[in-house]
Image 1 (cartoon, rainbow, N blue to C red):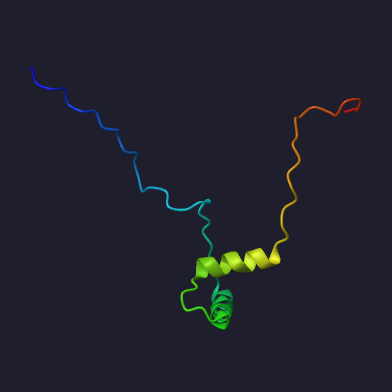
Image 2 (tube, rainbow, N blue to C red; image 1 turned 180 degrees about the horizontal axis):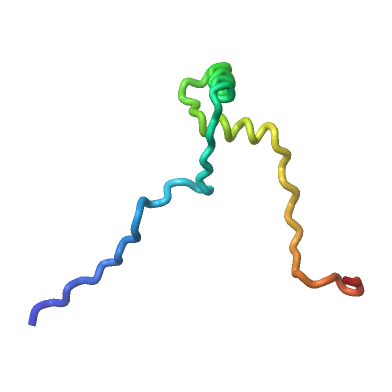
Length: 81
């Protein structure tokens, strides 16, 4: 009797995920694209790309989120709904 054929794990369909967060598509109008390019040039980093520049700008402008408070869906003890 011949040895059994080894079973290999079947790979998923499509391109494998490469990023941490979800992909966000963004359409830039020419004026905004030029302003973003000028901001990137002012940073003095030759390897700074648009995605990282947008992340940095958002990080500068948006305030940090408050720590999420756990919600059980039920009112607090003694509280009314």
